[in-house]
Length: 231
Image (cartoon, rainbow, N blue to C red; front, side, top):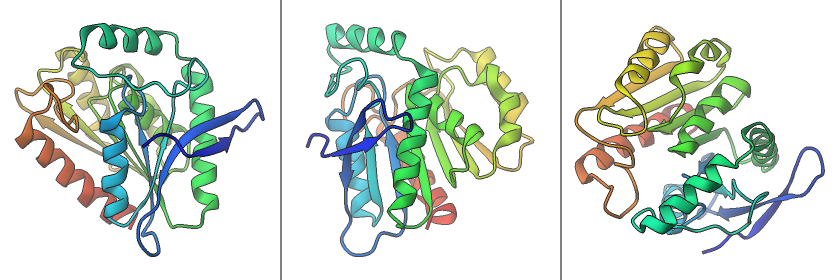
């Protein structure tokens, strides 16, 4: 499934291509699904569909649309992995957050209940930044990179934040993981879970990076978190 909805940006510079998946019946809330560096690929599409099956209005924006809309890459193919790294390096995170704020505004305009956001890898960092800079009700980050140096921003969180941290993450060094705990453990609006021995991408929908037991545990915790704080 490809993107099927265009969401206007806040500055009227364009429209964010977005995959929207409707649940059967009245939504219990909205879940925004923020991609890894591989685009709205089959794994992210499946995650959006899974949230819709649980009764949520699922919204998966194309984060790289300003560079090239419709990116869908496979992390298990080295050439595509390197291409994804290039897209991430050229991503304008400041403007990208503005695009996500437009998506959040659109989600609230649907009057489908509270809004949560779940992000993976680069999307995990974006989940943290959305939690610290918007009034989103709840956010979840899987193996977010770059959070350790931004922990002071957590004082601005008004909703709730959950972070999944694999201890053997090849993209988040042990000292950064320690900084995340030092800066966030005492915050009553933040919950951190460590996953001993697991690596970056352990909750991928499918593929070589997935760890079945770890993915199921993290996803169960995420579902319970959204049930409590979104609906």
